[in-house]
Image (cartoon, rainbow, N blue to C red; front, side, top):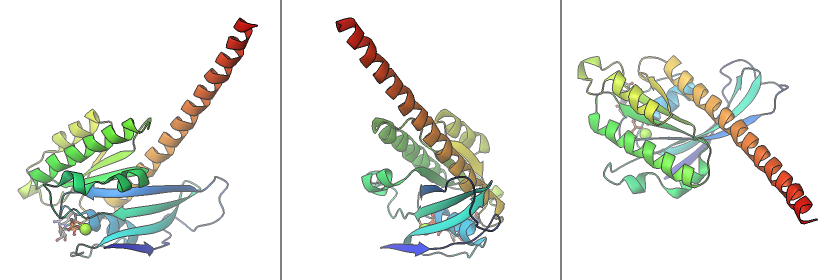
Length: 221
Ligand SMILES: Nc1nc2c(ncn2[C@@H]2O[C@H](COP(=O)(O)OP(=O)(O)OP(=O)(O)O)[C@@H](O)[C@H]2O)c(=O)[nH]1
Ligand SMILES: [Mg+2]
């Protein structure tokens, strides 16, 4: 079941008419089961850690002011009931919908790290095949408070992110709000950057096309 919820918390100051245009982004939160996808999402939206979230799939809308610009997030907190079914876990609809991705694993669950790697590679592949210049992704190692149960080192997480051109953070959704805040803000920055890179590429392609049309015409004249 997919539940759509509308929320308008004002975290980083009052929402007011800014001079910059509003930035809208669809963010998909994915990862293996029980790694803290809902904990991270709810922490960002409400600043709170509740503990148990159930397995309801939800899309939240959420507005914030960031550096003088109004930003509107739609955050899809996905569920992944069966780890083995990777294909079923990330469908075409989700891929088309999302402008950016948060891929979560638990630092105390090695299988969830392998799963995150697979999802990361699949997203990059499919989005690139669809013509995307740069895919905004943040890899998150959650449950940092469980140091005594750690099975994935920080270096492994950082290396995976580096090799796939993704952002990386280790956080504890249970312990702090700041980690969740940084993850979503950084992702929004990446979405903004990828949009301006796409615009530039389209602009250059257009310029090249019109120059070739002019030059081609001259040659045939
Ligand atoms: N110690 C610790 N526990 C956490 C943390 N984040 C989430 N949890 C716990 O991990 C369990 C799963 O959290 P959820 O947020 O429901 O995980 P999920 O990935 O949304 O799970 P599904 O939606 O069922 O796939 C819950 O018992 C949370 O309380 C964390 O940072 N540290
Ligand atoms: Mg959940």
